[in-house]
Length: 462
Image (cartoon, rainbow, N blue to C red; front, side):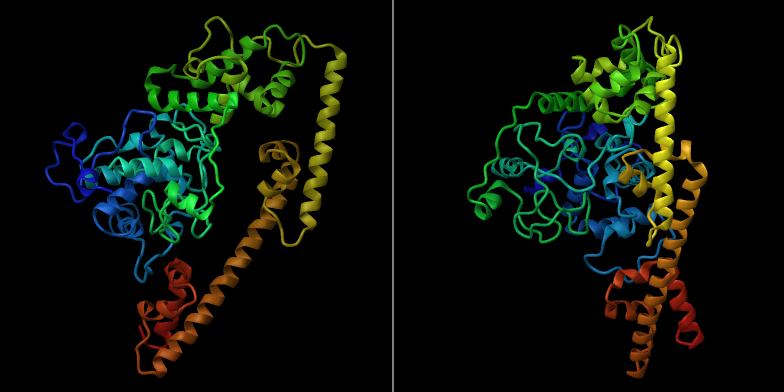
């Protein structure tokens, strides 16, 4: 990467009221375009510009402004950012609280005002957060090689992090998520994250690395119509301004679904559900404007009904949200009986699944039981709230027990190390104990640190 280019500066999106930035005010890449840079990529580039690991930049400069009381003493080199961000660094590219706080801090540290455009923060009123982003990092090797060959800055576009998008929008070929050297997956943001390189082994992720390891590997261009349509929808998503859309997106989507199903005389929800390959309950809520479809479902709606992505957010005026949509209205008695019988059958299946879960050891979470049964947790709660509560309570008690056991195990390990250090004439302190532990980062947890300090105080070592 050319360092002078990675420090490229543009005053257009800089806070003029703040004269000096603590971090380099490097310019985000392709803001407002389909290949706009992701926030995790920008953080990694900031770290490279300052010649430090991304994890060190996060723990020393960014996270302390979000969690002022978080203790990073003893943080090992190469530690996991997941401990700070609850193993959800993928959320940084989304629009949740973490993304909001990190964007605010980085804008303050860099004096830039356009960092929010590297996430989906501007789309929070339009998109559902469910299944929006990949849990692991994805990339396309040829893109890295082309950027390097053209002496351009190595970076990772935001669209690579979108769950539904499995292709490179430029080359129309599948994205990769396995390093050719160590053959491991990467977190969206890790301690040694750097665009174009593996965060585990730090090996090069360009196309030549793959061809060297796998001589017969061929990246074939995908010509599947639905996947290519997905690329077009994602391009619209990233290029269009959500402010230009109708205020209530759910009402707009509902008007389209009701318009498409207006000529269906009966079981409209069921027909739409079969076409879109989703549950009847989900379609019912969409048609009533009660919930927002996932991005994948939005794209599926556009594909099945041959409309542009932006059109989905423009309501069809004159079509009521509930027009011809209530299964309970204008239905024959036979249809009512069919719906009733299906509800009873579903309730029976849910009850059996929950009762079986109560007997399992170790206990499973309600989400796990729901996934295994092919249902949504909300559906299970609707039919069997009491049993769902029992399953959740069982799992919560199990998690608490395991947590207590883990903390007790850590305490015993720390006690042995402390006693060993003291026997050698070394006063035990948390920072001296941590390097000798099997997992040094575990000393950062609040509970284990409190118990350790209590033990040291009892022995007058602290």
